[in-house]
Length: 308
Ligand SMILES: Cc1ncc(COP(=O)(O)O)c(C=O)c1O
Image (cartoon, rainbow, N blue to C red; front, side, top):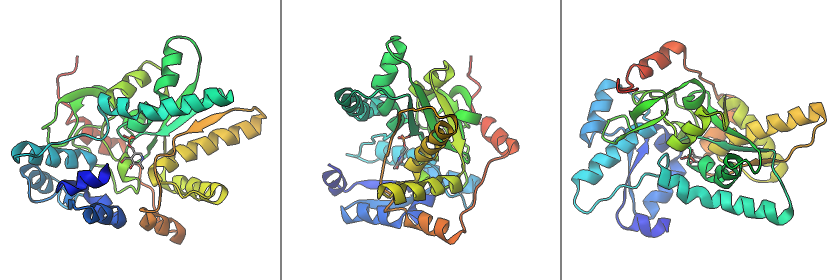
């Protein structure tokens, strides 16, 4: 599916930090025929504006969305499809949860904890959907944990408010946990988790106390990724490794208390395109960044004043 999509002459706006940190992902898309531009670029109005407002910015998903929407709406024959955050994307990804649930039922497994990384919330929303259904109907209870980077803590430090889904304010607003549409996170290696907001569905579930959220720092995430790779023989994506970190932490708690728990985690991707990040971790040059309250206050100031 990806091949035919890119062969259509697809134009991709790739978050600048990912464009630089994930050259192999970029080259896969170019090989299939896509034109890949680092975002924010200088070829859209919104890209030029963002570059002027934030010189030398490494970009964010919010910036790339604005640029892609601008091009799609101003170019004949172009369409834009959002790959995360929105309800239909979670619905699409519910296939992950349905397959997981079918496997659990087949083998008589009842998970105690379900863990997933959360960027815009689509893989986690999809994974938990049948389990959350049971929880909402009072048929079963599960602990559900969203894991986000400490550098972009939408759930754990964000505000539940109406905000724009993109930096350039060309998309509609949504009620969600947000750091403010103008918040640009530091150059975290889990580029797919650098989104200022969060799925509206997950935001409501979190707000209602039906799921938990934790944030983790990237060096501890890569420590978990390394352990997972050595034990399982699978090299995980940095995004997925956030979930792995917390799954290991929960397993270690069980080891201490002697409790037995079944933990499910969402493994969302391979790390083979992220070897620059692994190289930094292996060389001991990876750093962590946690935004200060002052950094976050600047983003919060951009949340529109329409909240009831
Ligand atoms: C490998 C991987 N996992 C997870 C995500 C997070 O996205 P979401 O929270 O929408 O599932 C991304 C986003 O690009 C990703 O590339």
